[in-house]
Image 1: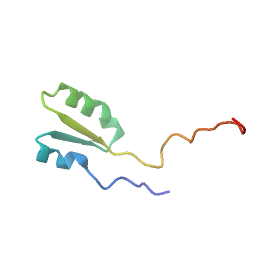
Image 2: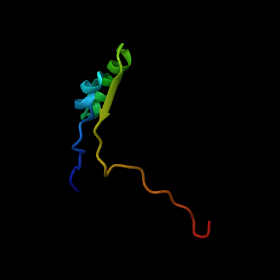
Image 3: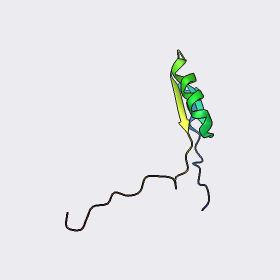
Length: 65
């Protein structure tokens, strides 16, 4: 299974809107980057790259429900 990271980097376009953007690609950086964003006096977009194949399983209901 190959890693299908999104090609869009929303943090790159934030300056166009007068915002600050942070791109998180390393899971170990989520905590520090979120703390950095929350401590900022400006609006910050935190763009977290994820693996689309890692998601919760589909809901399941017994037959007839």
